[in-house]
Length: 211
Picture 1 (cartoon, helix red, strand yellow):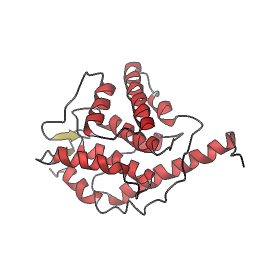
Picture 2 (picture 1 turned 45 degrees about the vertical axis):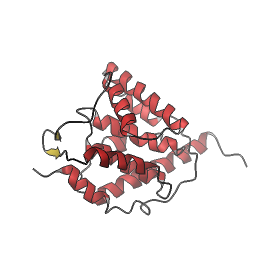
Picture 3 (picture 1 turned 90 degrees about the vertical axis):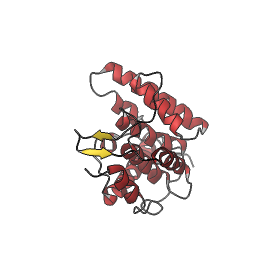
């Protein structure tokens, strides 16, 4: 079975992150919090409460400029699962009903930390960095459970730190991504960028800029 993590690490270097979308003028406030709206869909109230608790910490961390590190993502993963603490997975991980395998190598944790650190690179547009960080979490699959929810949190951590809010996240968080698809990775960056731009336009309809 192919190792999707190894595949992603190769594909990650093929995507023109610097150029796939332009830089956005910030801040970009939104008329509503799209993540909160998405997180409260469904009937599992306990799951929603845990996810929103973790999201509140994401917003707090972004507001204070806290670095995105494995320790921080472990904290958020534990919070969204209602656990006191979690550790990096100790073996290969599987997803999509066992169809995808994510290997564990001697340098996996170090590479994960390096990828998270790259999320603050100012040379790359924030929306592209956020999309890349989302995919990093999805394909490193660092914890035993909750990685998809964590990926959404990490995406928002990168955006919020850059002053970007989204009023809609459903198309971002509900589409299945593939590790072997550089065009899909670039398309995700464009999707995040497009929603950020649309969020800005919708905000201006409610609160016009003052000259």
